[in-house]
Length: 342
Image 1 (cartoon, helix red, strand yellow):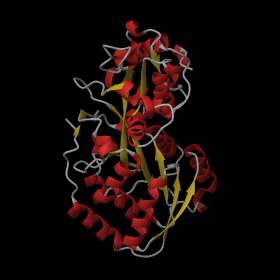
Image 2 (tube, rainbow, N blue to C red):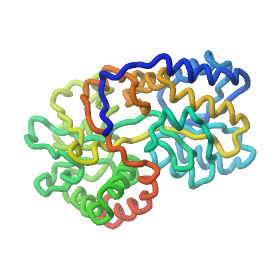
Image 3 (cartoon, rainbow, N blue to C red):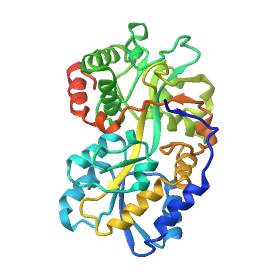
Image 4 (cartoon, rainbow, N blue to C red):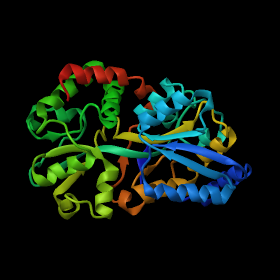
């Protein structure tokens, strides 16, 4: 049973070992294609270069565009690494043939097995819990697990993103893995029946819907809410005390975790440097940056969380194998289509 706790310690010794191993390369470049759009990641890049002497070159864009670009470039692609968000996009990269399997004792030891691709084509480096938020003024008995969101007593109260969103797709794929296709279909139909409005907007818009009164219950990733506690987010922060939260399924599988991860490109010209960078991302130093800079949960166990994340409290995370969850994505899309989830 994995629980996230703010009492974890920051193991500097382990970080030093990993950075020391990376520093052995100490020359050349690494070319990163990234769909992570967070300014706080700059610290990851600069610290890696300072520790190793390896120059980082970056191309940023949307995940699907970067995957298509890598396919078009083929064996001539300069990409060494693809970084992206969510298991579904990592699965698309595998299916597109733009990643390769690697051997790394550091990654296989540091990154929990359920956050690794079965063939070591990708590894997860940070996580976000996808949890239930509710209006404390309107909801006295919020749903305590994902399946309960489909309970008819919540009819006209629930807000969620569209079925085209990767977070929606991966959540349903995990419901399939944990509860079976029949239960997942019933859940999706119940969600559609309970929608307060047509699916729309991003995760922050779901939280804004609670503040505005349009939604009584919503599903969103924790880092959007943690960010609103830490900084001023329009339409959320000023009324944040109105919003309560539930880490779902604490007596069952645990809270669904979204993933941010990456892998080595299929035709990486700087393969060893690419592996060194991914190993650096698993260091305690980099893991703490993910939490402090972007309000995410570390992938590596035992790394201290930022205060904004720790305020959400301890919880049990779903340890379902995300590589197995990814195999359910086509079925999830079919279910969305069948039940009319827009």
